[in-house]
Amino acid sequence: MLSTTLLQAREGLKCAWEVAIGFSLSEFASKRIFLFSEAVMSDKSLNLGKGPILPLLLKMSGPSIATVLVVNAYNLIDAFWLARLSPNALAALTISFPLQLILGGVGVGTGLGAGSYAARMFGAGEVRKARQTAGQVFFLSAVLGALFIGVVLAGPELILRFFGATTEILPLARQYLIALLPGVPFLFLIMMTSNLLRAEGRPHLVMYSALLFSVISCILDPFLIFGWGPFPRLGIKGAAVAAVISQVAGALLSFYYLQQGSSKYRLKWHDLRPDYRIILSIYQTGFPSIIINLVVSVGMLLHNHILGGYSNLAVATLGIVSRMNGLVMIALYGIGHGLMPMVAYSEGASLHSRLMETVNLAVKISFAIALLSFLTVEAFAPAIATLFSDDSELQTLTATALRINFLILITAAPSLMWINMFIGLGQGKTAMVLLVGRETLILIPLLGLLPSLFGINGVWMAQPLANALAFLFIRYWTKRQYRIFESLIIDKA
Image (cartoon, rainbow, N blue to C red):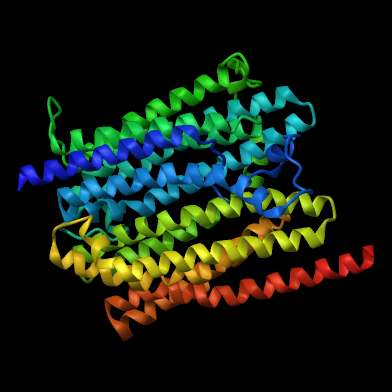
């Protein structure tokens, strides 16, 4: 059995290495929804208002797809190794995921705000203020990292139980979480500096940090989890140690890029002093992203609690399903990221016919991808489930959950494009209300109702149904916005 596991692990490692190396030929752009159109539009080689829309949309989307693919490949490979270790190890990883979402939400929101402010300062010729913004990022990474570590160390068991850890899973989840803490400030720094590099017009450098982070972690995972060669067998703790090592390496590389000769930042010691006016400006932009991620964390927390009432295998199933779903969402997020600056440019140039044509094309492409993915999972769900575990009960649960949950893609694809349209138009509050409303007004009540009617399948049904209902509201607001565009076109004529 051990030799079989090691053979599978080596084959998985080989695949992970080949996948990771393949990304080195791609340019990388933003992973997150709130991408800055300023940096994109500063590239004079791109004319977003002329030429065929389809090639331009694909060119704008490709880099983002590649970036998200790197990060999601890392998450999927992490889940693969821990599922091979034991279903409970995967369940422990899943339990800690809402906490990681909160951390990511704060880090990404802060980074987006910092990058947006720095981009505006570069545009205004205020290089000194942009450099000071980078200094605030280092200050905030240290403060937020220390705060996060302090809160977790004050009561790790209490936090994990709050996030749905059962008595059986709690020791494993605690091991993983405590071992992960030293890397938190470095992870904050990676998330924030990546947006500074984009604001400076050097998004390709984000590639190297993301690639280094993912490749190191993917390579170290099996060695530290299973104790290959001279490495100790650390179990689930090994996955956390691998993550911390990769986070430190990624943060050091990001720091180097900010300080190298061609960088406009080139920090000095006095830039690290806190400037609360800049910090306030950072959070005025980044706060909506933080709120969205916090609300999503609440939804994940409820899933953990409800599924924990069924079994640890049910929680492990959620970990597999969410990561498989994330693989498909890569393409959808990438198209959305490519769409946003095109919408922003067309809005600024009053090209409203082109704007609507671009959005409609993005909706059609994303829907086709979603439909194809859904049909593939419906046909091969049992085979996909066997890739993660030899446990027959976990395989059965996963196959059923995949088939139900992947219904979410049918309505998520167009909804995501329309949400990105609103963000591109500068209507971030509208996007936030629509997304937060989905989680609080629709998903949470469904999670309370459907399991009582359909058992565990009701949990898997909640997200697709919530998305379908939210789709109706988002479509209504989109049609309302389209009517505004049409009136502007008529007035212009």
